[in-house]
Image (cartoon, rainbow, N blue to C red; front, side, top):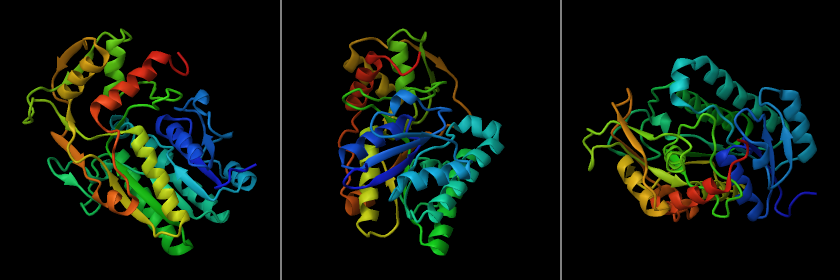
Amino acid sequence: MSAPLGTVLVTGGAGYIGSHACKALARAGYQPVTFDNLSTGWRDAVQFGPFEQGDLSDRARLDEVFARWKPQAVMHFAALSLVGDSMRDPGRYWRGNILSAVTLVEAAVAAGCLDFVFSSTCATYGDQDGVILTEETAQHPINAYGKSKLAIEQMLADFAASHGLRPVIFRYFNVAGADPEAQVGEFHQPETHLVPLMLDAVAGKRPALTVFGTDYPTRDGTCVRDYVHVMDLVDAHVLGLKRLLGGGAPAVYCLGTGSGFSVREVIDQSRLVTNREVPVTYGPRRAGDAVTLVCGSDKAARELGWAPARSTMEHMIADAWRWHQTGHYDR
């Protein structure tokens, strides 16, 4: 039985952002149906609606799921997303991200499911250091991950022109935090994100956090990045869905705070939130790391009424720390 507001197929719904999106959808009155192959997601993260295991490369499986649930929209999170890995093995990203997205979109169009919310990335902009990125900023991705996401954006535009697909696209940088009720949270294997790596070090689950580079021309010598609370992020996706279902036009939105936090500021805030020291080691700069990367959200505020209300570093770390203390899906 579907929820009163209808069913949404959520690809990657067993992953970090996707599982939080499912919670936000369920809370808003929709029925999220998770489609995930569990290659990087966790079965225990699927708590807010039905689960369909499958791979996006399997058109027959997708057709079966569309026929069974008859979703009115798709929310597409599933992707390979490690920048370094994409540079070592670009073919994996072109196959895993682009071909899968083509198969998904063709299945959605065949099923008459034309409202499509896509989780893209600010990596499509490439290395544009020190400026606030907007929807109009030229896109020049510098790695296979960013290029694959840009290719999907372009593919969605083609299907919009040819088949009436209605995409809303979100671009953003770093996501942090967790569900404030600690039902779902951030857990990757291997872990590559700053906040969970830092909290693992605080909890003694790894020896130390490594800070790469302390001589950048920033306020404290470390890189600055924009962070958005995962719950703010998924709220934007639900607002984008509502825009489409309400007859609004397809659109592209950047999601950020427009300012960002340095690595040292993140560490300092962790000490205040957890009341524990962060074990830190220092290493050289990593090749390709930009000094400052931030994006704005004026258009999302204006058209969707979105604001990153939870996206203070204190709030993000506090929610992530609460999740860390509950244990994880699978150790």
